[in-house]
Length: 111
Image 1 (spheres, rainbow, N blue to C red):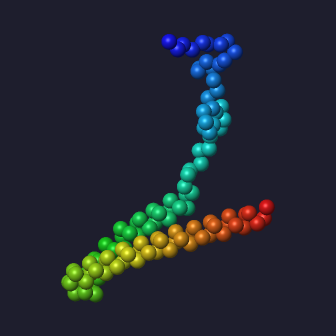
Image 2: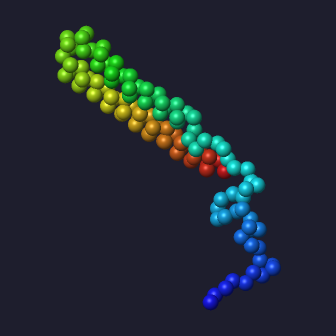
Image 3: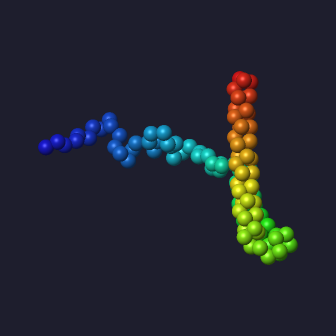
């Protein structure tokens, strides 16, 4: 049988430090900053609102005024407007990603 001897110089499991692997010790302050910046959340909320309001609004505005009751054309326009909002979100996200990369490059050059 294999048994484990407890040597007085070894720390027991309860006496060991709280630091395990790469996690911080219990006494250290942890960062409570949000993982995603507030500006990114606000852009997402704005585009989510636009994705709901613009297609539905364009449908109801154009069904009687522009298309004289033809719901097929008004629905098609609503689908096009939803795609326009989606494409706008992609363009904004790509522009933000490129600006982040440029800022990182400038920060490395300054050092």
